Image 1 (spheres, rainbow, N blue to C red):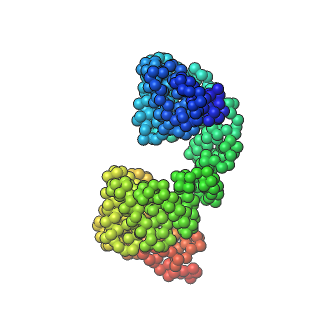
Image 2 (image 1 turned 90 degrees about the vertical axis):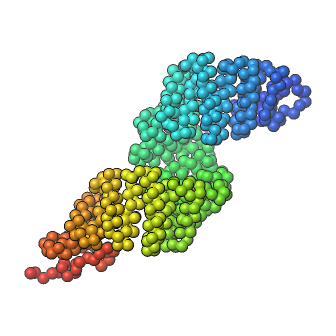
Image 3 (image 1 turned 180 degrees about the vertical axis):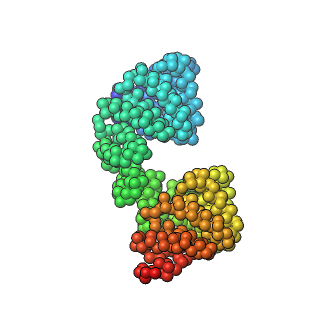
Length: 579
């Protein structure tokens, strides 16, 4: 009767009946209270051990687990394990069942307990294989659980090996229409999804869906979860219409199964928000995030991490839309909740401080920006260590502000420390290393240290070509800056070579979107030909630049460039008289 009441959710009644079973075995008096509290941590006297006590304790532990009382359940299953070993011996299947259940509890208790959970599962697997054989469904259960530990550790290759073994056993012994088979298919699909093996993942997700639609209704929580997973794969495959259709179907199923005000419905809304954000559909993303936040604030604790994430997502949309005040307000609210949740120092707090610094910099409030960024830097050093890449990022942001303020020595020191960290963590051939080298070259150029600037731009160029390819837009930008420095250093041949290299890439990458960039480079090329006395190529460069301006509806007077647009109005007047 206790089992039946547990299955229908009558936990108090079930708890009382399990307690009654235990008290009967312990020869307790009939009028002893049978409240649920009385079975919180049952301990059985060695004098009254009987085989039936093991399943009774197992049921009590399972009930505590279902009610979210993890530590009580751990205590109960520890007692179950002790009793099973005394009654049945070390290698009995009831011992394996208790070990498996304890492993599940430690898995759910904390990721910090994964080693404990793994040891329990391995012991359970050894006993089950020895007692039941390699192809028993209980063996598959433990294999599945070991796979979950590997997923928790981001060890997806190892997880997949266990899941595939469990899937094979469950398919053969329980049939491919069983829920246990479907559950392992879903787990294996998740690991394949994480590994980027989308087609196999989709097959297994659809296997789960096939079984679930028969065993459940379409409006079931698990159906909503797998539909969302399938949608994510289509999103990652850039099949956006299909992805959005599945996300919306997942949301409908989730709402029907759980009601509108449920944390999982909020999670689905946030995924839809992420989808729209990636597609740069900011209005739709904003609405999805707002709907998710409304639900989270109703069903979650006020400082729940999900609320903090959603506030940050909303803040980021307003930041992308240059709505600085609203962005700062939302990130500021997230920061307050982070302080409540995490205390004074935490890497997430440092990240929000860093973002607030960038927002205030974009607002033009340099002093407040530096305050936030310096607080973020100090916290990142304290929490993550001096050599963490996040420290490097904040050093770069602060250095950029000092560079704009023409405080070049301070900027150089910050950029050099950032470079040291990035080279140590990423090696010499990483794009972020090239980015920092570019910043250092800018400082050298601004100080008039042209040889040092040339050295840094040249190294930047080497890394960019290696990582991005010869025709990338970033390569053209570096070539342009290298041309500027060669020109300032008096080496017009190398300057011309650099500007022409930049122009070739610009024609292929930005011709339609940014004609002013091409005109600027043509102007530099024209000026070099002018300095060398090469009249024909000079006029060709200036005339093409003028034509680009006029066809784009631009005026040379409105262009912000380094250098001067050489005598456009003189050499190329709007209506020059015939010669």
